Image (tube, rainbow, N blue to C red; front, side):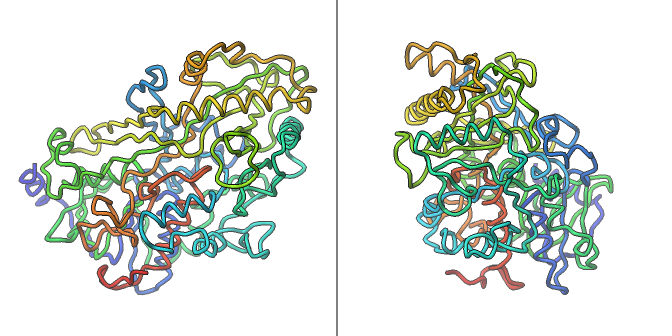
Length: 531
């Protein structure tokens, strides 16, 4: 295969050298393109497989569930999952400038401080602690509580705390959670997550704000040292010694060889490791099976795959019409310990209020306005899956095995999450809405609970971990996010996360990119200071 690549390279156009090439125009890539091009004499090229966002539905918060499956959704499919009754799960990921920030449910939750202590433990680097990341989060945010020493003010990304537009059903859900003893919170981003509150959202004036909207402003796009190349995929990285010499890019312009001093992969937890594997960097056995010659054996690339699941759902028929959401349907998340009693600390389970009849494909959803769902899940699953390539080309499918619900701990915590949802769902505070429980109805044993959970769970769209950072010998990237085997290649996206944060991971991904932008200097990679 290597000889074949060299033969095709003779026929490709060669582009001038860039100082930095960013692969992937999603949340991390758009932030980095803006931040790294702030230095006028640094030439930055951003390469994105998709196009510019154009569908007006993207900016309508209530339209987000219908965006999945459209032309700008990669719409990956997992392998059949033994832990979810043999089901194949669709993984929506954005294929456009702005990436999955154009598709997701707009929830903004930094995570719990203990989540980031795990990152510190993995790397030995305090830069990844909650305390050190606080200024990073603040720089990202434009929060209504900004300036209080915790939340950010004047940053590129608006954080909306819903008030008057919160559904009366979600208000009743919050009252039910408070009646259980859960603290009332003012958002999920203060460092305390256990409690009940409306979800913080990336919305301004009733419209979604994508990462591209926030960072790739007209002024940024007008910089002469920033080039954005859309409709193009990096087929592979060409190596020379301990560096990436060039990138083989395919797109509307035909095959192009792009030279770069430094390469930053921001293609996400699926495509970043896939590109490394197509380039001969990864587990020797996986590359052999895919017909790719192994240049650098790195067994952990593609492993440690993690994702959040949500049970969809604990379904109730409503005794009165449920008004349509004025936000994005999933309006409130209650984080808690599994015992339901402890009011502080790192959350273990979550129950969410869906102002709609949200169910998995295994169940028939009632008509909108006649029912509502309480979603339930666990915050830190211990099951670990993997990602593999099936062949050497960009069109060869990815073999995605999240290994859902493979540990006894995950299954036990999911039972407790379901029980918590039903406890909240049957509280007096929801009596004005609840006519009867439709799902799961009667469950007589742990086995029946497990079966219902297996049938009901859906992805929460948070894949991560496949190029984990750490200071152990097997980690893929070091604390500076440099691929350990090469001097000028970095990975800056959800794939580097050693473990999931407690909630949606978008805020953490942005913090990863901002941290890298702050520490990165226009110098040889080996001279980047370690902390």
